[in-house]
Length: 66
Image 1 (cartoon, one colour):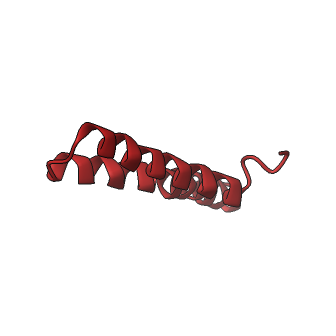
Image 2 (cartoon, one colour):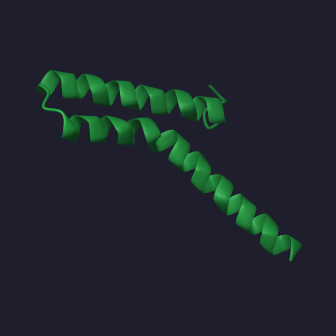
């Protein structure tokens, strides 16, 4: 039972990390689909979402070697 519990916790932690990292991109996509904005503003919002996701990935520890 202990191994099964560890596997379950590991899977849930992995899902949590993926959702935490992808949240800014998902919010940017929702914001762009809801509000009518120009083309260059879409690029700007997606850029901010991507940079926020990159920052979260660094904070989580994916790119600690840099």
